[in-house]
Length: 201
Image (tube, rainbow, N blue to C red; front, side, top):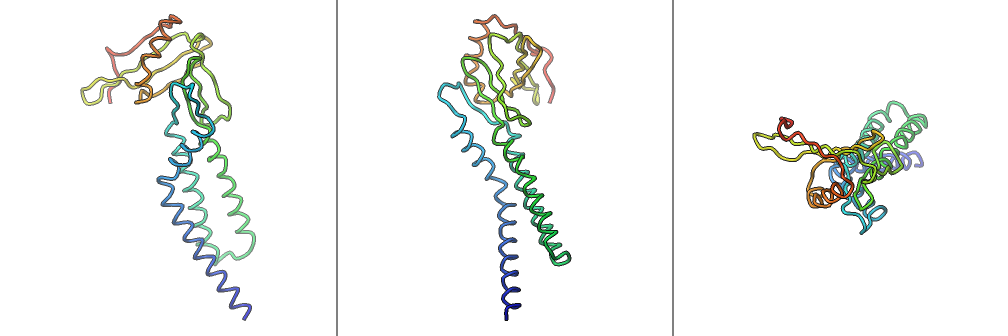
């Protein structure tokens, strides 16, 4: 009787694990956008910022972490019948824990602009880096030719010490383009562009 109960319990756990795995696969499509955006808006956002933005790579890495866990669980479900014992469970648990850095790094990947400059926290860093307007040497405006139409593509900011940061020209940056132009005039920053020789898509 005890053996039957144990077997029934194991089968029930397997069914639950299969359900969790399927949910992980499906939710990985939209959950990263909800969690990353919600977390960053609560922890990092401030009204003093011109705008706050999350690189698309942050969502992709978070999504990858969820898919990785789902794949590990799938492999566990496939091999648990052949490799019974605690060893497989420990390996599975270790691999799941190994995915935690991906979630942490994706949550801390962002950039924003304010009156002081550009603030960027890269995907491989846990510390925010600041690119101040008064230390900026030049700005390179990158144009792109997409199917015969030339439009703004990127802004490349270069500091006096040689460090650089590239931001995509999106809706958020477009709304505050005039603020950037004001800083260019205020600090007499050199501006270059490739309008006559744009990148061809």
